[in-house]
Length: 487
Image (tube, helix red, strand yellow):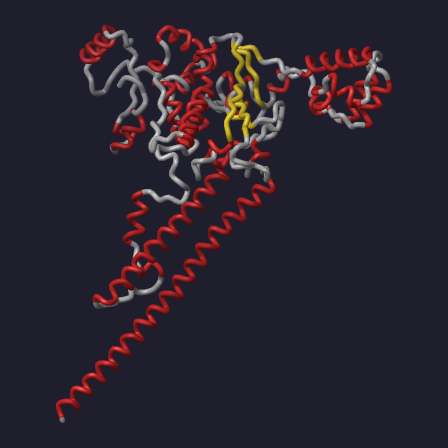
């Protein structure tokens, strides 16, 4: 009987040890669960705070009544491009999504409000390519849509800069909650130590399901934390981006007539290089004297409209009274037609004809007369493209290679650049050709010149990359040499 009693004591001791171990595991699990709940609450509060700030932004600066099917009319450098809102907002976290989400609608409409459209000071051809690409991404049955490029290397350089500027990458349909592969790896390898508690050590195959569940929970929590970090960074980037593009009171829209081609540019863009001829021409002290806008009739109050009608001897006093009683503003006066005047109570045909004649004269008077630029539209347009690239690229901006200019226009382009950017300033727009090399001998340079001339490429060469100056990394090389034409 002694052996059975010893076996019983051993079983009891083993059970006590098991219960003790179980209590330790339970205590560790309870502590772990508490930490997880705190982390989940913190993550939820983080996302809630971002959404709260976005709602406040929408209320203060935006339009609450927006929808994916809204038809947007966007003034892109003077060209009106129509696109559904949902096309531009489908790439979550992109700057296009931020601009047209509705959160900043009122802040982005230019203060001139000549047409009530959001104005984008960018190359309209490249923006249309981006819009076409996003339309295809949204509606195509293909799983992956070909990333947009331009056959002209100079235009492709502008296009790729714009894509990067607006945050449109090769995976344009990825949602804002997605993580890149590097972040996914970090989430996979993150452990409980990052949560503030030690790893729960559970042995035995019977507990494998529990271990797997805890491991998966850790990974999902780390993914959620990384998503929150990305959401915070994206929101801060959005606010900074909107602040950089929102029109200011001093940021006039300049309308240009370039030998019959109309262009619209922000004055701040024309002045990005202040020492240039363009920078001086549109300086704040000089520009008001050149402003050819004859009269700001759009901004008339209804009292000014009534005064205008009263001062016209051919407009009866009762018409002036009707305009004043209905509080017709300047912008409304310019929009009035025959049927509108009838609704106001003007029914006599002769009076209608007289008032319409005077309104048409006022419409002509209120028109903005563009500043005439006596240069090739192609050459001047390339300069404007460079100024816009400087705005988008900031310190990463690079001047243009003459190889990106059509051969037939190269001489005229150089002359136009030298007119607006005299002397050394020309290098702000156009890269300076290399006449000598520290590595190649004069004979080698002469041989290369001969080859280039035989191929019809011209003999001007431009130093794109020098390791001692630009850095030794592969990324440094690609930053300087990609999309630069024949190299």
